[in-house]
Length: 357
Image (cartoon, rainbow, N blue to C red; front, top):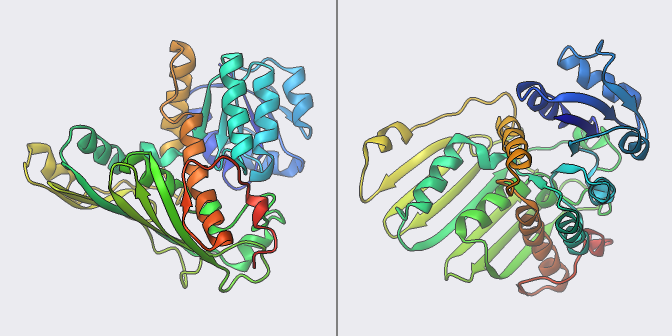
């Protein structure tokens, strides 16, 4: 399967690792800064591979080669533009989170991909975490019974050095704030586990310490789901002095699970009314990860490859990407309007928050 990578920044090493692990034919890589391409290739001993073409213009890369799959890992603000260019030309895409920066662009991606018969996977790789998969299996088996409530806490640290590495970070047009960039993975998991269908959200965001940014560094929200369950969201980059945790709680009539670790990669609590033999294995489960991005990219790529080969939907499809984006934008809209926001949201964009702080 012929593969291309557009964007060779901080997250790209996880994509290249997934390419190597899945034995894809790495045709080309693109970045506006050529050194970024060499840096990421050298991390995987691919810097001397003459078969990998290098580009600074993604349109040229797409037009000059045949691709089965392209991953888009640029700054968030141009994800949609690049995705639409690839989809228009019949190329399947994996889009790093967030899938887009507006509801309108997310809807365009879905519409065009369905018209062209192209597969789109939103890169919410934490769905493949071992702990997350175990929670999902228990949920689908009905072991929780009726859901009461849930919560996600993303308590991380991002300092000035992180934001100055790339000028697009923390801007409304290209990035959004802590909720859109750091917390969207957890927000995706929460919405997925709680039943997807949101009735309304009330959110509050603030910029407490990162006054050199445009966007928020703390966001809190209460979410009401159509199935009657409720949830809370806490996402921040203000935790001193380093990343503390990403924890996901699910409370049901017959079960309680808490996923913890730096990125929902451990099972801290696993209690069900009806115990099974496997439950003992799950108690205290820890998945070792080399960074907060976890190990999920390799599994997400494997799933996307199979989706293309078997002509089925990817496990994390474009609708999943849209759902996570919509919930973040719902919190932003609630902050801007100072009131709860009803779902579905027809139109809102990160840039609508310009001048908020």
